[in-house]
Length: 112
Length: 112
Picture 1 (cartoon, each protein chain N blue to C red):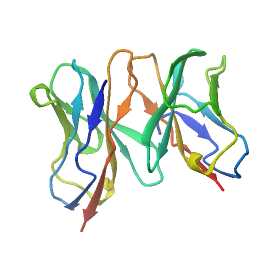
Picture 2 (picture 1 turned 135 degrees about the horizontal axis):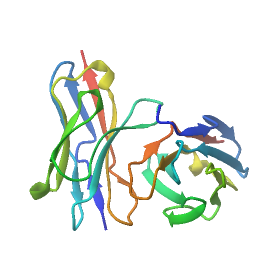
Picture 3 (picture 1 turned 120 degrees about the horizontal axis):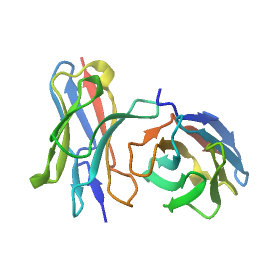
Picture 4 (picture 1 turned 45 degrees about the vertical axis):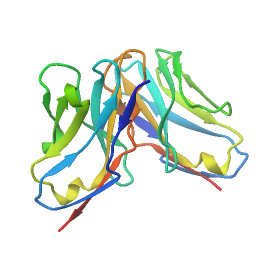
């Protein structure tokens, strides 16, 4: 158990819908990262927050957004879902910005 | 730009045999290097990491990895594999302001 908690573990939704994935980082960790894992793209970095502020953006679609709240938990919002958004979404956390990153177990999203 | 190459997509070894998974990186300086393991349906678990110092690093589950600057490699090894080692293994790196970049992964199959 890495200490990073993600909910829900599994989610099935229809195209065009919107979902929110939630992440609680390890106790004391200030950085939160979101990654997408799909068969064709592999593990792709989406976005990073540090202590509530956006720090870096990767291959995140405009339909996706994220935020980190004062209690340091984070949410990834995915809207106007398409079939190709079906993937495993990982949240990860670290103490700072150049520390070891620990991953949660992921949220499986299936868009039908 | 930084990149990670795992040249072996799939490796099959017999239980009890030794294992070496290859990882090569491209970066101008020495990056921070990691190996993660993903068991079926599970999240990413950190096996070991290299930041600096001794080039042979020990990790969990009996794994070790050796950093070779001259070869830009960070290969993962285990002297004797167990059936429970069957999983997907990812090499990853980051340095400075870059974000954690993953290789495409190597799927390990163990045969009795």
